[in-house]
Every structure is written in C-alpha cells, then in structure tokens.
Image (spheres, rainbow, N blue to C red):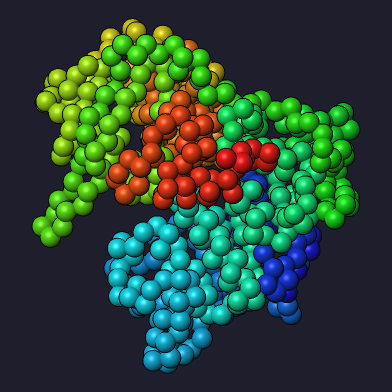
Length: 592
C-alpha cells in the first residue's frame, strides 16, 4: 500500500531533515515510528500529508498504491489529504472547532471528502461515533464539554470520515493520562482490524507502541537506524536506550538518561550520527557511516548491533529512601494540608475539583501527586501557591496558614515557594537571557542587586547547568536545558518548597530521567521539599518517596511507591497500575 524509498527531505534553509528513508505499510498494518525531537519522524508525516514548508525539496519515492505523493501541487493534496490519507493530530483541541457542535464538524468532514448529501452524511457521522466507541449524544455537544480522551476519539472519527487507506497519527496520546492513553491505543488497534486501514503511528513511547504495532521503525538525526518486527528485541543501541529511558515500576531498576542531544544532520560528520552518545562506539563509528544490514528479522544501521549487550548510560538516582529514613516525625512539615477541598462555582453549576485531601511534605522529601486530567492535581498546586483559596480545610506552608494570609504576608510566603511549569517553551520569555530569567524572582523579591550574580550562579549549578549559558536566550537551548533554566529560576529565591507541575511531560524520554535526578539531588542535597505533579505513575515510582493518587478530585490512595504498585486499591488505582505496566521500560515491571 504505502512504499517510501530513499526519501530525502531538505527544508528551505538547507537543513536536511531526512536522508534515504525506506518504509512500507501494508493494508491493516500498524507501523510505529519512534525517535527523539529532531529525529525526522514528524517530517516524514508532513511529507505524507503535503504539509512540508513551501520551498522544501523531496527526492526519492513516496507512493500510496499507484499514487505518487512527491511533487504534488496544493490542489492535488486537497483530493488526497482526508480522502486517501487521514490524520490524527497531536492535540485534539487544535483539530476541533471550539464553537461548533461535534455533529456539524463530522458531517462537514464527511461531505467534503465523500461528496455525500447531508442526510447520508449525518448517518455516517453517527456511525463514526459508534466506531470510536462514543455514545450518539456526543454529536450534540461542543469540544470543551468533552474530556481529553473523548476529544481524541472525535479526532480519530474525523480522520476516518473520508474512509482513508492510510491513517497518520502523530503523537495521538501525548498529554493524556496512562489509562486514557491505553484506551486510545486499543481503539486504534481495533480500527486497524475492522477498517483494514494502514497506520503510521508516531510516538516517543516505544513500550506502548510495541504492544499494538506490527513493526517498529526508529529514526535518529534524519536517518532510519532500525526497522523490524515489534515483537523482536531491539538491536540498535539507540533503540535499546529509548526503551531503557522509560521509567519502570521497580525502584531498583535504573532509569536511564541518554546524554547529549540529537545532532543536526549537517554537523554530524561522515560517521554514525549516534556515535558521540553511544556507549559502544568504536573509532570506526566516528569515521564511517553504517549501512543497513539484516539482523535476525530486522534491518539495523549499526557497526555493532546486539540485543544482549549491557547498556552503560547514566542512570537517575534511586528514590531517596535514605532521605525518608532521616525525616524526623516530630519535625514540622514544610507543607501540611488538612481536609482541603475546592469547589468551582458558576451561575448554573458547582464543580468539586478537590475534596478531603490530607497531605504532608517534609524537608528533603518528594511527594508525587498522580492522576488524570481533571483529577485536581493542578488545583492543588494553585492552592499551595496562594492562587486559589480552598473552599474547605487548612493549608500550612512553612508554618504559615495560607487561608488566613492576605496582601504582603501572602506575598512573603510566595517568595519561599518555587514553581516549575509544564511547558519549558512557553514559560521563558524568548527575548530574555538565561541570567535575566533566573534573576526574575530576585528582582520581584527586592533582593539587592549585588547579590544577584552569586545567587544566579548557585541556582544554575543546582539545576545542573554551566554558567557559560547565562548570555544565551531560550531559542538557543534544548528542551531539557530550557526546563533546567526554569528550575534554576525557581531555585533562585532559595525556596523551602518546589512545585513541579508536569515538569517532564513535554520533554523527550531521553531527558526526563536527568530532570528527575536533578529534583532528587535537590531533595537529598539541600533538603528541598518537592511536590511532583504528574500523570505518569512510572515517573512517580522512580522519583518519589510518597505517592498520592487523585481521581475526580478525591484522594483514592496514598502510600510509598512500593505499596501503591504492590497493593493498589480497587477502582482507579488498580486501573492506573495496570496501564502503567504497559508503558514501563524493559524488565521493569514487578508481578505484584
């Protein structure tokens, strides 16, 4: 069905995004395409959808049955995109019109791609909702009235509206909690069989992909480094590193961090692009580009492929058991919540975002708060930052009752809190240097200017950044470096509590362990209390001393990582643990 042969894509600025890529997808087959940011996987998707920037050049062949996809005009793509090739976007809300009902959007898509009359198009819209396992009354609502998982199902229905031969899904589960991610992946697997549609499934989550894909292809720096059956062990050291970079559900299994970053294709020289990051690299790897060779049932571009060699990448710190042991039960906790709840009120509705939460965070301790979207995680963070007042309960931070503070007193407590947001791209002003960004809380707190250089240097060091970055701007940094700048900024005021709200969720899997290690070192080294908000149970197990599981605003389980994994409470905690097992790294799942 789909055949890609020696596809090389060059952007208008001369950047070669892919080189000699070869892929095939048969009807009813799922090909998973994985790799870090900058690997070229999304460029392949754009090429198949006619969405490359104007002025880009593509050589080689990309063919869907008899249809040549290279060199097509914008008018040609109007008859291909949606009809022959459907697309599921990364963020469902970006593909949905917020002011139109779901039925109108589905009917319009059916009519555009099949030229059906309105009545049969309306019937087809209801059939599409059934195919993606949504009730018929979903047609009557607006996108904002649906959950993230429901919106993603609607996005899949829209992609199927033209009855395409090929479905391209680019990170279709990013931002969703693990339970919902599994539901979406299972749905795609069912549709592959029932509709006999071929799928290109792009994601960073290799363990989950291997569970539903027929074959897996891995890209690095614009080239295909491995392609083979999903059930076969990985051979390329990069593929194995990506698998090991997924957090496990066993604290005793190291969490791998891959050093360095994906190089620009134009600067990687004539050798293997992965050589500078590879623990097995020999001199020949730096000098000679590896050619694809068969290894068992796979094709691997590596001078030294293996599936049993021991990896030797840096690992994240084991959760701080010593820190937990050293906690003085009599000492006042940095954070103490008693019966905390919050209700959002509007003219016609009351929504309970948080109810009956009791929680303590001590100095040197990392407490993970895990749950799906809408579970109350971020509401808790806003309450601790003094941005929301709880409807019920008591909130103490550093001995101060936040529910009683106003004005200057409240601002004084806020200066003792650090916050790291989810998005390292949107959280940093693009025109400011690293030094200016890290100094922001110092200026706000009125810290004397002559103290700024020492504070900035100390904060950068604690965040794992060299001081020679102080003159750079965010666009000159990698995603991981940007998030470390955000951590340094949060540390500049020397807080007693750091609130990390999904601080790793937008980063490549290869850099998440490094960020988690930094937080662990801050807790163990300087006694910082950390509230680690995440939807990823594996990350919480690897990095936290205690875990709180929230579901629909209610704490449904609290305990150590081992307790939560070994003895999950019935209902959502058990579902969450089952979902996390599917996404965990290799040899990393306890039997329970």
